[in-house]
Length: 222
Image 1 (cartoon, one colour):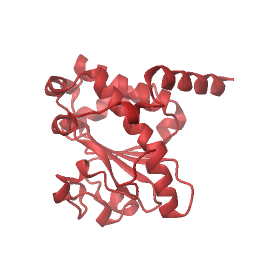
Image 2 (tube, one colour):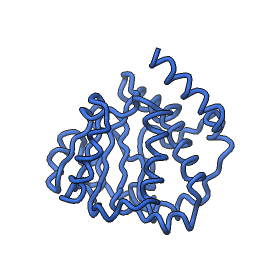
Image 3 (tube, one colour):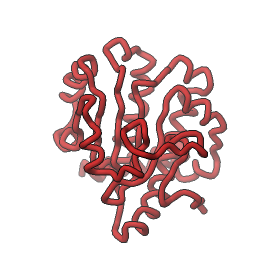
Image 4 (cartoon, helix red, strand yellow):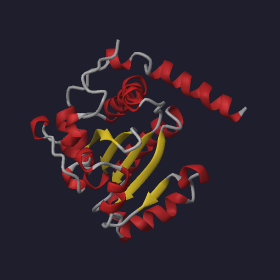
């Protein structure tokens, strides 16, 4: 019954928010500016063929982010990107890997994140993202690697972890600054951005997190 209610809420949200039509109706023209203040994006696939989503939380500048967009528009963009993952990226990865792909590998870079980083505006932004990923697009993460975790983040993580259900917590691994070996166990060097120890830089596309590189690139939604 709980699972049924969760799915019902998800479908209601997608209908009310426009999740079913957001890829056609919404133009996030400020994306390039937004990327300067919160670098994130899909880049490549891991050795199992799953799309890799990378987010550099330590570089989040909420004050400047909200000067170039609004929270509502940014949340809507996140919904658009999640729709693209379900409707374009997963199917393209499934064809490329010749098996069903319906989960991401997430790399969350928290270098520089401390207790001072978690101001009220930052918390508001992150809570909106949690709403999208955990409530409205459930079960899309196969594994999350939190890298560059320092003392400040570890204190935050200790508090956050208590509120996660055991299944979600089991998917998350927190690593310090010696993460390259772990990443290269899971990802070919050519698929990993150079700032994470790989060999890719996507110079022609303005950097790896702007490139949307993967089997899905060039495929448009009908």
